Image (cartoon, rainbow, N blue to C red; front, side, top):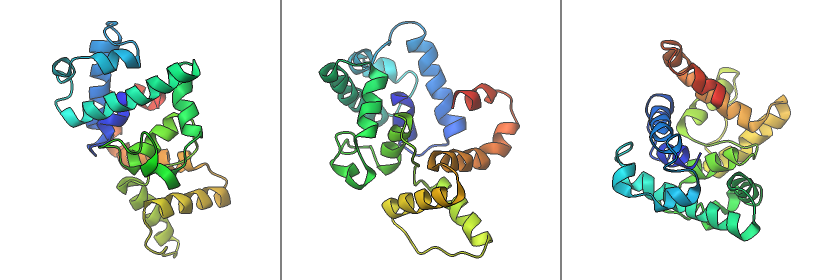
Length: 197
């Protein structure tokens, strides 16, 4: 999850760039036992990691996220997954820039929100795909919402979700899947990816 979030942070196509590289990372490092914990990721040599993903900044983001979550795990004496969940449930997007993960160089609001989602929080990423799809639907039904910054957009979608009986995370993933559906249907290679998400 940490590697996925770090790769996603640079804004490349999720299903056709990020997912295959995260799968390659898993195959070369996780399944071989080279990296089995966040501590292993922190200690991994950059040159080795760059065999999978050349972008140094992404690896620095991954290592910084891993360092914080790992420190929380040790402090609370819980698992890595529980540490991510603990962090996610005790932070809020209104304070994201002051948050230990939000303040990491390279972690923007979308990566921050994505990490919260992976930690079990029912929220969304205010990225361009989600904005375009959700605002497009509203315009189709004759509504023209005012211009909103990222935090206002998150709150706006939470309100829509409540009024429509949906969850924000469902609306977020529905827009991502809808936007990628035509491309994904062209190949069966990513069928398992949908199930893993």
